[in-house]
Each structure stands twice: as structure tokens, then as C-alpha cells.
Length: 114
Length: 112
Image (tube, rainbow over the protein chains, first blue to last red):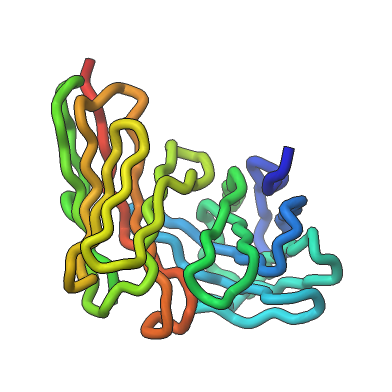
């Protein structure tokens, strides 16, 4: 079955620690995205990647980093510089970013701070 | 500020009743997407609208985009408990930098 997987489902971060969220897709999509969702707010774009080895900052990139070494994978690292990391993180992919291409979402990772 | 306004923020309906959720944009909508989300889960794609006056249906859910392409509505007929969840609208296009921006979502509860 084609789809997007995210792991882990829950992740706990200690003060000063970097953590990495995994996102994998087997849809052969070129574009991948990371969003953050907070209660009562819509999704906000953190980073996106249009092609392997290339990525751009979204609206709230500070405190986060990404890599895109493989087409299938787009991991997100939440660094210690992100002072309010508790949120629900969603990964998505689309065929490309030319506009009006449907984005398909993974099941999400909930990050909590200890 | 939010570029997409959804209303209502939440609603509770009796099973079997109809309901409508609205999504209004401050800019012309080029691509308008409706997603459904169960709490703590990912977004499920429902429908995408592009043309003014366009209307699409899937089972008991109908989405419309107005002629001016600044407002979309999602209508559910004869609601069921399985319809409960969060409904989000999203929009893309050159006026949004070709990135998808989302409304805050509408929480729907269906009472049996």
C-alpha cells in the first residue's frame, strides 16, 4: 500500500535535547512538507522540499532543521533552540509544488517536553 | 493573521441533521481543499475545488466554491457519528506563494 509513515507516534524531549521526527513516503512524490499544529490553530508550515537535496524555510522554521538526502525521506529535527516544541507535527507529500497539487498527510507525531 | 477564516469554530448536531461549515478567504482562491482530521491523527483529503461555482460530492458530503472564488462551504447531509472530527480548509495558488495555508478548523460533534 502506498502512503506516508511517521514515527514515533509520541516523542518526549528533555530540556536542551535535539530530537528527530521521521517521515517516509512511498508515493514517489517529489515534494514533502512539515507542519506544526497547535490547539485552536490551523497547520503552520515549518519546512518544505521540492526535490532531493533542496529545501526551503516555511513560516516558522526557527528552531527546526531538515534534510532531504533521499526522495522517500524528509526527517525533521527539533533543536534545543525551539523554546516551545510541544505540538502535533504532521508530514505531507505531493507530486510537486507547482500549485494545486493535493497534499497527502501522514498520521502525525505528538512531541511533548519533559 | 489568518488568511482563511472558518466558521463556526465548533458545532454539535443531532444525528440525522444537516450542517454547513464555511471557509472564507481574504484573497481569491485558486485551489481550495477540504480535509477531515480525527483527534490525534493525520488529515484525510476530502475534496479539491478550483473553478468558480464548482461543486463536488462524496457520499453525504458536498463542497462548493462560490462564483467569486472567495468562499467555500462544506455541507453534510443526514449527519452520522462517523462524520465527527475536525474539518479544515486549505488554499494554495500564487497569492499564497504556491504554499498551502489552512484555516483554524471546525470541530464537529454528532450526538446519537
